[in-house]
Image 1 (cartoon, rainbow, N blue to C red):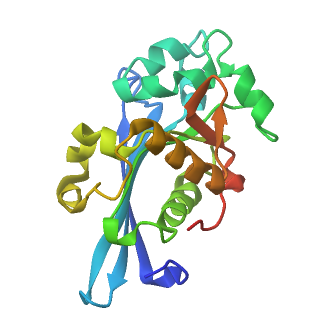
Image 2 (image 1 turned 135 degrees about the vertical axis):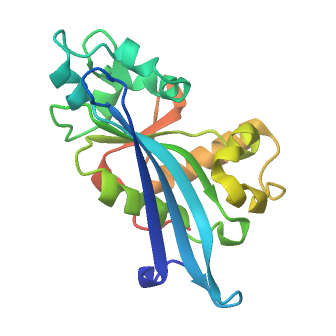
Length: 220
């Protein structure tokens, strides 16, 4: 199956709000798990095609409930996964870093950011464009207030310790057909995301960005 007919696809989106400002009852990061499912003729059932996890950094919330503006260093230290995205920002000014500013065209005045953190596609459905479909659905649902979409492009076959959060779906994942050499795998993955519209930061090539409207429709 290919994703030409999106009516046959179903997306479930689970959100969890982190109350990182517990005293005030606000949270600056919304974590999400998006599961894409489709009808499989052979199985005569809906099956899971892919799972994408991530978070939305709502720095506007942080700005409004702190007296001294945003302390990005403190916010990004709240959880280990956030630290991978520190290079997107100028920690002194509380804005996007100069590289991001130079690479983008229409950033607004906020630095609210949609992060694609971990992505896995079922082996039987890889290479059919479902990554773009899953990302596009999440951008539509969660990216309307974000100026930037970012990801840390690390091949999943070298991060197997994180598979537990995919639950039962992790049992279906295989990596034998994927490159076993890390440099080759890195280059192949970044090339794929580049075809989707993402661009690497020169100082940190694994950190890739695009503006929400730039995502290519479907890439095989």
